[in-house]
Amino acid sequence: MILSAVLAILLQAAAAPEAPPEPSPPACSTDRHGEFDFWVGEWDVYRFGTDTKVAQSRIERMHSGCAIRETWMPLKGDGGSSLSNFEPATGLWHQTWIGAAPGRVEFQGGSPAEGTMVLTGWWRNVAGPEKHGWIRMTYTVGPDGSVRQHGELSTDHGLKWKTAFDFAYRAKK
Image (tube, rainbow, N blue to C red; front, side):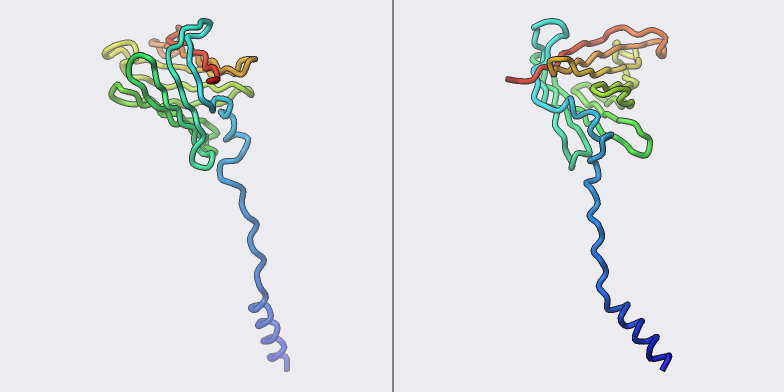
């Protein structure tokens, strides 16, 4: 009798349907993954503080929000692309830049404040043949919604920095 009761309980447990698992949120939908969203858009790019247009740029979220891709289209010279992503394991943002010159640049950094991103990378030949240096790019949202990309160069391992480029990304009309 006891054996049949235990067997009946085991059969009921085996036959009971399991509750479906809760759907997990999209992999890259956290606030940290959205820290660089202020840069996403279609832009006309100018030298900062001027009306001198130097490029167009398309920045788009990709891969379910796990990456941000820039397509850089200068008015003169060759273009390039970057791919940026947030890595939860390290808490860092990474960006890979590839342009017409051989090689690539790997940047990393983070968002020290809302509407700001700082990425730093070692750029070979950035100041000429065999003249390597660190580039620190600071992206900041302006009051009008534009984004400033201020690039600074250090050839002495970060002791001194000088402006290498300074752009204002203004939304295309």
